[in-house]
Image (cartoon, rainbow, N blue to C red; front, top):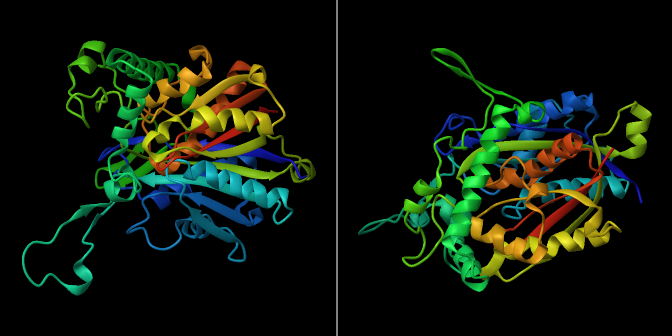
Length: 392
């Protein structure tokens, strides 16, 4: 089967909820990330035949954001584009689908992009179609309704983390300590300019001039264990999951340029990495966060490797309890996981993150000079996803 290589990988900074990127649409964030990845790869837009876009909050964004990104980037109208939703796995599902098109010989060059503006997720008037004849009408927050509230269980994803905390006897202190570590690692990475190669700045025109956003906004310098400990449970009175040990609500985009290995050779392009395998595994919705404990080993097995072959991991922190439960099963060395922060410290723009962690994985593998790495994350409703990447 045709080998798929990654020749470009870029992301925007991650903006805070109602933060610096609040006025930049998810589509425009995607355009910025895609253009940067194409430029890095030395691929012109007219060479791209397929765009796969991962996104959750599509209400109010107009039809098929993937096609919007494709045409805004100047790609041929004859190409095709689509938008996929596997909740938090959407960006990686886009990578998987684009890679499968290449494997099957349907296309030579494709772009996968994950985008999200949680800030711009609209409110809904679900029953307004027939009018409100009497009484009050309910306004529904689409950010909760279409993502953060489990469609199957009917409760917030935070309660699925509480379920895991109870099942695996994960303490509040363990969760707060992981949250602190995530922020500390993210701040250290920013100070050392670790993300300089993977981030493309976002330029925003204002009445006062051009504002350049080039740094992740979510990491907190003033974070401390005392401050985290003082926070009240967010989802359950007697619970342990707080806003401090949960991932952020954020905006951002990440893009990867994929092509067949033969096409890269023909064009004289040196790949960054090879996509070795992808894997999806469903778990019960009420413990959706445990998914990577199963998707990671499956992806490694499909790659024909063992855990001993993997030198580095990016496993998203949706919640500290969720990540800790996964690591109760995988027993990974924390020195080889999320070295520069993850969902808690960096933030979690949900449709973007799954693509973002592949981008970050590639650059950290280069810094560490490791051959194989794995990216994975849990997914609302249960269908976790993972990818194995080889550094080239």
